[in-house]
Amino acid sequence: MKLNLKILKMTGHLLSRDMERQPDRNPRVLPALRVGAAVLCILLCAISRNAVFVITIITVELFRLAMRPPDDIAHVLKALILPVIFTFLIMLPAVFFGHPKTMLTVTLKVLESVMIIAVLNCVLDWQDVTQAFGVSENLSMLVLILDMTMRFLMILGDYSNQLLEAVTLRSVGKDSWKHAKVDGILGTTFMKSRQMAEATSEAMACRCFDGRYRCYESHRFSGYDLLYLGVAAIMVLFFVKTQKGV
Amino acid sequence: MHIPDNYLSPQTCGVMAAAMVPVWAVSVHKVKKELPKDKIPAMGVAAAFSFLAMMFNIPMPGGTTGHAVGGTLIAVILGPYAACLSMSIALLLQALIFGDGGILSFGANCFNMAFVLPFVGYGLYRILLRKKTSGRRELISAGIGSYVGINAAAFCAAVEFGIQPMLFRDTSGNALYCPYGLNVSVPVMMLGHLTVFGLAEVIFTVAVLAFVRRTALETTAVSTDAATPLPLKIFLMLLIAATPLGLLAAGTAWGEWDKAEIAKTGIGYTPKGMAKGLTYRALMPDYSLKGLPAGFGYILSALIGTALLIIVFKLLWRNKGEDEELQ
View 1 (cartoon, chains in turn orange, red):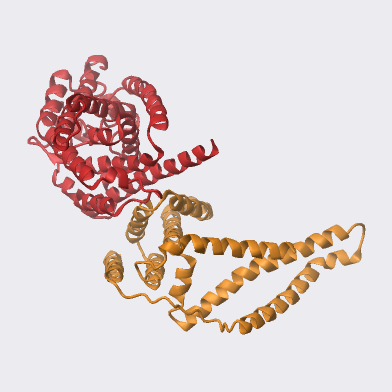
View 2 (spheres, rainbow over the protein chains, first blue to last red; view 1 turned 180 degrees about the horizontal axis):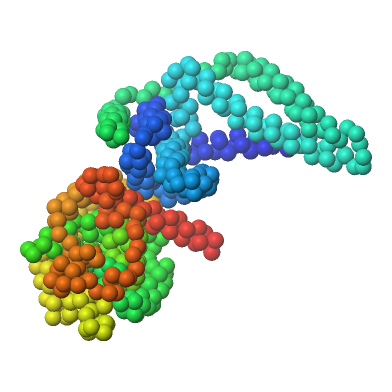
């Protein structure tokens, strides 16, 4: 019952967000372009051999972020704090081993990657991201797998937590079966996951959903898209230029 | 006009910082009470404009440079108290990240550029404007106000420099901090500001004010979700793209030489207070990044400074909104 309520709440939250965002839909730039440029940017930063490219991208993203509404800024900054601090702490020993640059490089790259994704998350709705991945059948499958994984991680996590709670409440005194409770819970959760997978598959069949996300909104290639492609091309050229002579 | 560290004695810096504390306190109180919540993001944009104005260095005969400040402009658009806070935050950012202006002398820089400049400029603007608010009269009043404001600030900076050798000398009679007395600092500082830099301040104030009034940005800059409107974005980006023009002025501004340069200005020694004074290494000293061409580093610095100022004020807007909701 508790589980169903949680899923209902989650669905309700998503639906209400959709209703709120409905007027802004129909983005100016093709979502696939935005997602592609973001992925490309992260990849280029990851393989960049000097800090110039990474710092430039961080600066541009910071400026883009500054132009967003305050709520988005707060949302992005919150998303940034934990990974950046975590990376900084993990890489801190590098400073004591005489490689402070390594610490700085890795932290900057994490900052840049998380920032790009967090800003993209503000700019694009989850439906737009799904639409962006829907351009190819393989990518569409990736979205389905990701979606299922996230959903079932939450549902099964909650289920196993409830099982653990129930077992803990019943295990008063010295019981030999108490030691077997972890593998028991895991086994039961696995069986439950199989049942749920079958139920999901049947539900998909009932709704004629074969796992492919189709987009019914057509996006005409506009000047904005061309401009975005131009910016992405400049970014690649700038990357090539900064890598020369390293 | 950005006084670096070690040009003023710690005592002078302490007095100037103490003088600024009540000004900041009153400004915060007034902004909280009087400035509508919607105007707070505009404070960030105004601070960003001022930050960019200060990056356009203008050369003067004799190798020195200077720049416009834009304090009167912010005061005209948002009021003198908001201008004081905006300028203070812009100066803090310049000192901490770009090493423009000292950490110890932050109070003195704020006194000159965040207090004297906007309040004098705005006061004169109000007197000249009286009750008439016609477009041309407003622009002329703002222009005259900004000219007098920047000169008043420059005069204060000159006096702060000039009193150092009178008050602080070592046993051999050499100055401990700024070696130039009032007889040098006042004419040199005022000459530049009464002519070129004053004119630059007038042009900057009038041009931006005319643009803001024409596009009614003071109202659109504060849309319901506080996102920055497109004309403002374009204007900011144009200014940022043009900032490398500030690098054409190769010299160092008067009173902003480093330890190595000061001995070569004609005094023949480096004052002890400067040689052994505070040394702060900024993240991007002189608006540059190691390994990057100067022009590109300048643009990146402009982007970072502008973005940080706008972000700070937008977050303040958000916090003020939450506080009001709680009340």
